[in-house]
Length: 535
Image (tube, rainbow, N blue to C red):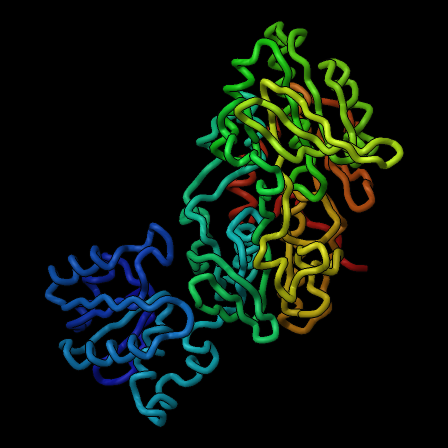
């Protein structure tokens, strides 16, 4: 049979996850009872439920018991309950969980010390009762799913766990398009269970901290997950609380943001409704993910108003906490042409600090040329807010963080300088690159190759060059594809002048890139993603 069944004694055998179809073969193999030790949905929505398995097992004449045990330290009462079931159920009994190790550990815990040492001792010791993974990945976003898929393509036997509390996975780069009426928001969301790589274990829980000295990740529910190697990529947190009053008015009173799935459609609704008045677009201090997104929202809105003949009746202002329009100077002239086309007013060193939604007033903290700070109130009819962004609290307060709160790394190898079995990538990584999906695409290869080399005590072979990309949607139908590395070095993929707006890049942004994301990057394919190796 396809299942790998291990016989522990004359009554009990163990195996990994079973399917409803497996039950017929299990019954024909002589088993009279089944114990399910895996919690329902631990492996995602495709995992058969205990109720489904029990129903079919009883049809086939087998007894069925559901005794779920979560990943982590196994409570004594669980092993006692397991022992009672073995006494009561007719044998032979087959117990299963995700891999069979929790069932093995339960059996061993119910025995005397001498007996336990004889029952699959090597598995129990090596896996700390099924609790230690080869690799633990914290975060199920673009970075977490992508790096897990790439690792498993290289080493299918790796036991990898992904710690991720959310049920849905989002393709966030398209939310700007949604806010501009150029993309269906429903196409940006999928079930997390559908994107978790097939041979990875999904721990559907929230991380609360790290204990790198003990190789443990702490979960909010009190569990501790052990690892041999750790990949930190929980993303970045939207710190709405840093703008007084904004959370109470988001999604109404003309206040919106393309940085949230539920609000991007509201942006497009506001753009369509606005015929005259004042539209404000904001950008907070760095770091933020996709630093071009705040102005992309402005460009697409203005293009719609221009096309529909009402831009002349709308005052457009772009308030950025920074001192420049875009961090890579080579692209600024092209962007300024669109700023002038749309008659948008630029306000540098202007940071949104509060919003009065009911009265439609936005308050900015502005710094003049002499460094003097004062507050300015602006009336608005539409306000697109880009929230301040910070490292997740559980990372910021951990030994892995640097002074900024993000995971400390060597920016070239993406390995933690203090803990050589820890790597990081994505928005939670302290590397000074642009926080974009395009950067993650390159970082995945660096982390996958370097992590496996570190596992074998070999020299780390890959170097990250800081590559990032920002497809700047300057109008509906044209994109400036800004690609650059550390220090703003231009790194174009295609032999075309990089600062020129092109229809080809709009096609890439709206069609090619989303397809490559879902079917390439999240599946472990690394097309055009390989960075350079060390010389």
